[in-house]
Amino acid sequence: MVLFNGITAVAGAVVMWTSPNSLGFGSLLQLMQDHLPLIGKLFTSFALPGALLVVVIALPHLWTAALIALDHFRAPLMVIIVGIVLVGWTLLQLLIVFGPNMLSFAFLIIGLLETNMGTMWANRLSKAAKAR
Image (cartoon, rainbow, N blue to C red):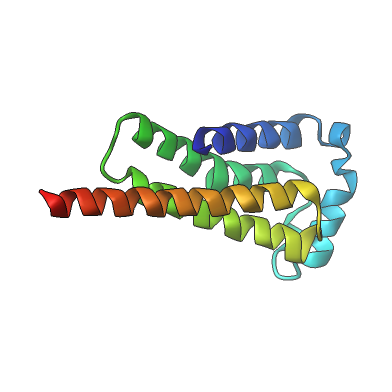
């Protein structure tokens, strides 16, 4: 799930940078400008939103996937962190920018699942360490 989120965030950023109108993103810039009063004026193209998507969602998720693959001791904590970040990102989209939509709801659920799985994993490791 973590790898999936990292890959889809990279794909979303690439679409934002290369052909945003192919997915009907034309009105997205206006939505961000209208609904984000403090920073909305920074969104004059899809360069910044795409970069933010990569920095805030893609890179942390891909890093976490690598930690999981390496069985790093910090992997469960990172799963919790990226899950919380994804929930926050998605709530921003749902409540401020886009309003209710199925894609944001799906990623909200995925973020909640990530957070829950990371918590259960960390608890299991903690119990195993105490049993030793």
